[in-house]
Length: 232
Image 1 (cartoon, helix red, strand yellow):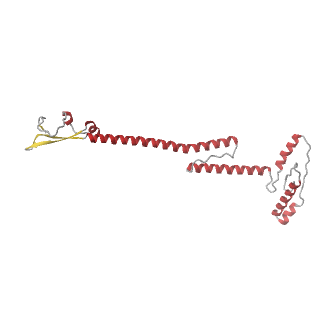
Image 2 (cartoon, rainbow, N blue to C red; image 1 turned 180 degrees about the horizontal axis):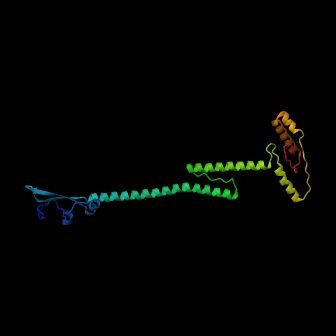
Image 3 (cartoon, rainbow, N blue to C red; image 1 turned 120 degrees about the vertical axis):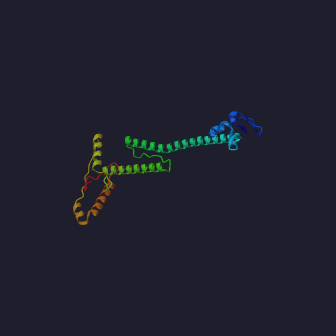
């Protein structure tokens, strides 16, 4: 306890404090941590007039240690969470960017080489995996249709025999080789009347049967072709 002139008039306890320890109120956690003391003072009044002041000082050094410990744990936890977040973000980025890069590379290869058998490896079951599966299915469908179109361009769909365009290429090869060659033309007479009398379905079956018979009769060194509707 102090009088109005700041002189100590009574004390309880054996702790020793400087005047600076007792001056001013604690302004915040940092001030509390730096002091290690929590002074609280009230006026001593006598007959309504201030006769002195009573100062109670609490030792909060233990609390300061706890606060430092709590702050350290909080800082460490925040740093650890940040590192885990960065690691997760990088892993997530790789899971997204790698399939996209693979798709881009596959599309570039298909564009440059025309190789529609190219496939992208499925590495995940998430949205990127669905995207890869969709891309592979689309490329497989394009490849299948391309093969069908290529076959239709050089083979007769009804008989399965090479068509006129195919024989033109074969004739060019034979002419370039300069060896002997022979060409036999076969015509189905009355095919138009058969179609009119029995329908095109019967006529198509006849064409397929004739094509099969011709293919079975030629030698292994010969080739059978369908040149037109009723010509072989």
